[in-house]
Image (cartoon, rainbow, N blue to C red; front, side, top):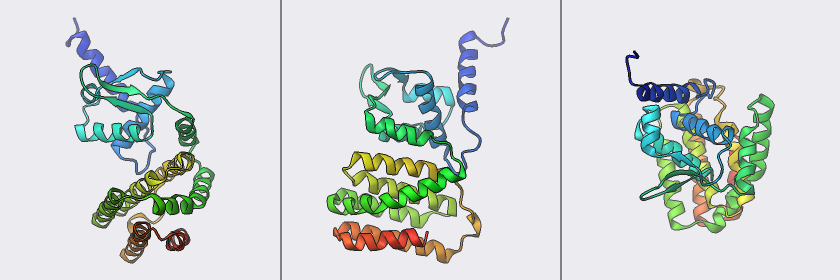
Length: 245
């Protein structure tokens, strides 16, 4: 006779499968990002169709034993990428979203292997798109957008490690991209950030405080230019941002 009921053994097995599925080579990815990647793969590999349920926050919590904050962040990442939708109320939960062509293209970009040449391609493509994304943000920013960007700058300044600083940097750039109404450009840009997130800094803890302050200052100038709606200033800051990166 087994020591535990079959349903408990099944639950433990599911948790092991979920945790074991998390890649071991994701560099600076957070646990929430790893969980989001596993859930995305589950949807794709399982052939789940739009509208099919993938569970609830509670069921994912029971399956992984992760904190609710980790589950919520993973769900937010997938929702923002257009991969899942959240339905409230009775019978609600997490469901596969109806992926349009833009979302499908973003998924394709994120599935490209992270070889060194791929990362170099992502950097080149991101730099070409940066001015379009930033100038469009300057044209369409709202008071709420600017407030969010300011809050993210504060978060960057308060980070304790270089890894956390870089991660906060990507979040800021993703938020700037959200302002851009050009879905195609936004999808490609965010897709390139997905590859850059998977790389680690070649300098890491050796990064000087002076360089970190320079990077923070240039991002502050970028947000200032976006808030002012000054497209010429945005272009100048983006050029310096990419040259000194």
